[in-house]
Amino acid sequence: MFREIFAFGVMFVNLVLAGRTVNYTCLMSSEGYCVFQGVRIDSVEEASNVKLLAPAYDITRIKFRESAMFILPDNIYETFPNMLELKVWWQSLHSIYIPPNLLHLDAERNRIQRISFDTNTVPMLKKLELGYNRLKTIENISYFENLEILDLSHNDLRSIDLCLFQRMKHLRILDLSVNNMAIVKNSMEHKLESLTVLYLNDNRLSYLDINVLRQFPNLETLHLFKNGLMYMEYENMRTMFPKINIVHIYDNDWNCENLAEMIIYFKKINIVEYKLFSSMKCKERVIDGICCSEGKALTILKKSNLYFSNYVNELNLHSQHIMEEMKQSKREIQKLIEHENMTQASLQAFSADMNAIRNRIENITVLAADTSSTVSRNKKHEKVDKLVQEIYKIKQDHQSLTRENQAFKQQIEKYENIKIEMESIRAYSEEMRNTIQELKEENNHLKVDLYQLLNEFHELRASKNPEKEV
Image (tube, rainbow, N blue to C red; front, top):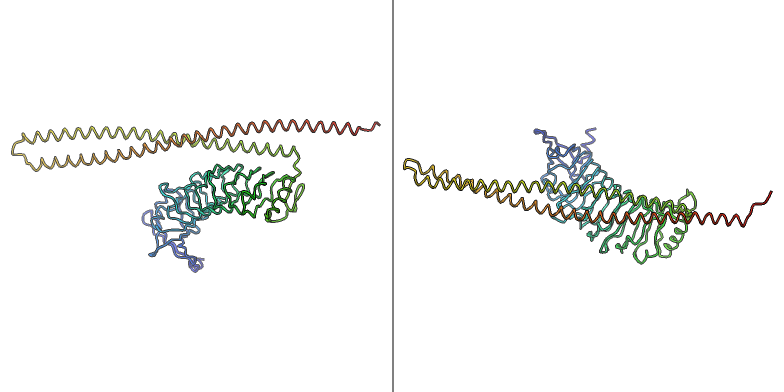
């Protein structure tokens, strides 16, 4: 077994136990990667005890195999300062830091809940693969302005506002599939002309207003299959997306009338690929290989009620998340205020110490004038020099604390801005909740009207076809 592993020629692992430190050395693979194998980190604390050793020559591509790491080793970016590509898929990572100079990160099939980076720089990252992780929120993704390919599939985003991607002027492919999403919003102010492929398949979308995607004028491929779509506005599709030629819509809950008209429209504008296969098992009808239902009024009402219920639930969850963020921000602000008070007290204490030392110097000066010639002048000078050094050190500490105090004040201002933004989002959520409630009430009225029409219909039919007397 060991002979086969070494014959593979990918790498070897050199374990050097020096206290608690474990060293790992990589070898170059035939694909040009420096490959580490068998690295194990079970906690954040252990990350500092693992040391990666680099070959003598410059390395730009790193890969980990058969490893289990809670986080990456602390010294990875220090050891490989010129790293451009990092592959860490299937490594049990819970979070990951992305350095500014990295161009490609493949971190699929981990347990990542959070990504971090230096917010003072614009990351150079062009390709980011985070599929099959545990991301619930991606607010900080907008910092990656140079991305060309972004894969966020198989996470748990639930709902998303496409404005998160508006700064990515080079983004070509965006994968949001399999994210349990029921809501897609778009508050983008500018067009994202680079996007050509968008994956929204395998979510919980019941309705899609195609205008939500209006800011992607060069869209060529749109994946909408395996949702719960019953209806879609499609009439302006060619106007909004002149280059579109693939729209996968199979495996949804289409209303047959809407589906039939949509397929006719697709063929008219030369969208020839809208299914991957012909469905053979449909509960009601099949149109051009795609299942649909006749769209009975009660069924539509039931599904629309379900959609609105899901929408309200998503808003409630979003509101709860916002409240938690606000509570956390409040706690952080309180800590900063407490620290600022402590810093002010420290500065006052230093000021008192400086006054005391100044008084001591004055006393020594007076004492020096009255001291007999038997006392050594060198000792007096030594005391004065020592006190001067103490004053200089206190002055440095005072300046350091002043800078720190200023930094904390800036942080407090930042958290105050976050608090204002949170309040704005909360107000928006409340407004949306009221809108949903109005729609639900209108839906209920429609249901009542429908029942009345059905009763009138049955009465009319009974009057026209009276039962024969026995």
